[in-house]
Image (cartoon, rainbow over all chains, first blue to last red; front, side, top):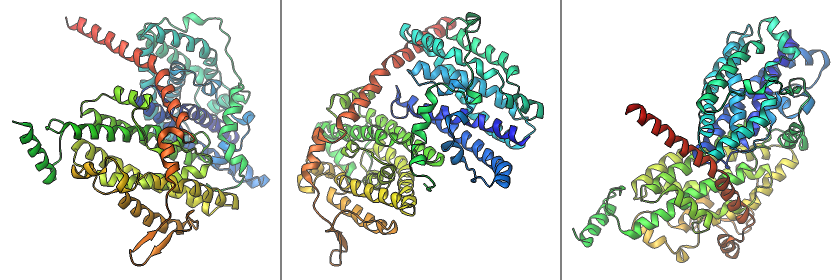
Length: 263
Length: 315
């Protein structure tokens, strides 16, 4: 059970951290000052979630591994900074580049909407720590969904340029949405053990919400329009796009250059 | 009422320490001085996000990353308050920003220096924010109401910024030989530019005299600089580091630290645009603004459509 719980927790943490890292690239470069602040806020929320989850994963890891193998003590930072890309379990969607504002908004909307339904259910997890983290994070995620929904509507129902940019973003990102609802082995095990969320079950809810917001944005449903589009996958099992290597190379550079230091 | 009478009332308020408010009559030159100073201050917050933002993606721990991100975000917030304060004087945020991009408006030269190591993030918090706070504490009592009130909010957050900077350096100073070297090196590079933040000597400062009469400014450049040196010269001992000035010495007679002369050639060069990052910083701001144009247009186009629909509904 513990190893499943560990992998499941890491998966949730990696999603939050990698998207936080991506969003933080906007800090100081946003299109409007208020939105610079908003996207940075979302990044901060996600780092907070990632930290809670990594701290828990570290505790689990120390219980599972160190006692038997004498491996180094895990901390939130060893998990974030000293794992290779192949050990990262985030969805491919969150590692995709920021692109333009439309790309960033749509990535956030797709992810936050999924995370919202997932955390809503995770509040009832048999694992009380995960349930508590989900409950605490849900307020933040509710805001992320609202904020990104409003922007999808603004861009879709704004100017011709904003509409086209949003549609381009949709083309780029849509193939990465399927993975969110295709369970990895540890997710299926986690459901069976009573602490995980069945991602297949939240797919219809996600689709309904996406349809509603797209309709309000005066765009046609991306779901009905995309039958037959091939969905990429692999991130949850550590097989990523080429993006992740660069994200980690940058993010981990200090810890790799100066091993074993306190900061 | 004649201009002379209005001016008399205005000066009387200044004399009595009554704040000047947006709707009050004020001399044109007072208004212009404030617009120049407040917008310069706002731009400094916004451009100041760039050198520190440079290390967000590489912050060495998750805790440091979160703190740094929150700090840079605070600066965006300060920029907002200040742009709003400038707007109370009859300018628009857009015009103010365009003046920055055209080079007409200035920002603090300190942000034209590069952040080369993680130590620089500590040094900026400790030295640059430390110097800024001294100036800003004084501005909490400035004669223009909206500016003074914005400063009160800003000062509360700035003291947290300075502490986080010192805390970064503290961790480095207790760390490995490489970390200690990083700490000293950052202090060496940021010390003199921080002293320059207080501006030219009192005798050479063009706007100072009038600003002091109007109580916009309440302490002179050299007074503030001395206060800063006295403060930092003590704090650096806690870090077990040194300041790169062999003339720095406690003076028993003046009860202040003596210190060496600033390199004014460098100062004026950076002001004129020849600093290591002047071009890079302005380019980054212009790029964000230009690439954001379609986003701002979409937002206002949508707002207009929405308003029209609502009006139709009511009709």
